Image 1: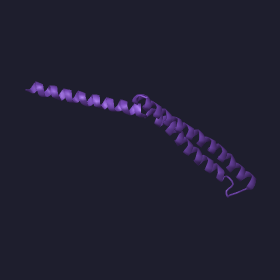
Image 2 (image 1 turned 45 degrees about the horizontal axis):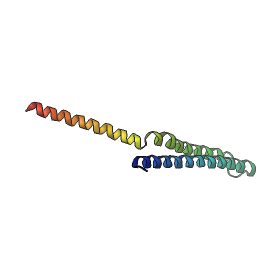
Image 3 (image 1 turned 135 degrees about the vertical axis):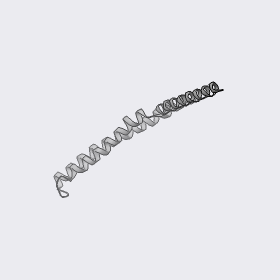
Image 4 (image 1 turned 120 degrees about the vertical axis):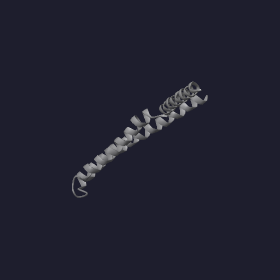
Amino acid sequence: MEPDQHEIYEYARKRIRQKKALYLHFVIFFLGSIFMFIINKWMNVGEPNNWYIWAITTWFFIFMFHFIKVFVTDSFMNKNWERDQINKLMTMQEKKLERLKNEIDNTK
């Protein structure tokens, strides 16, 4: 594999691992929510009787943070984004250096 192809492959592999972990998190969240509901309703565990709602809501927000990280943050701010930002900054710095060089040449 060429270096660019290897980099693309590694990035794809990383993204698939992230998505797989997110899907597993969702399945565990779903089954855990059902389990907490059943424990609360059938066994009357815990006081007050709506403790499971707070637990599921908290877990849901944690899941949403995981979702945002995988599909928003990591999707847009990946290596290509970093590379583009670096190139943009390097271009700006080169332009400034060229402008300063021209100013120095013009003052002589």
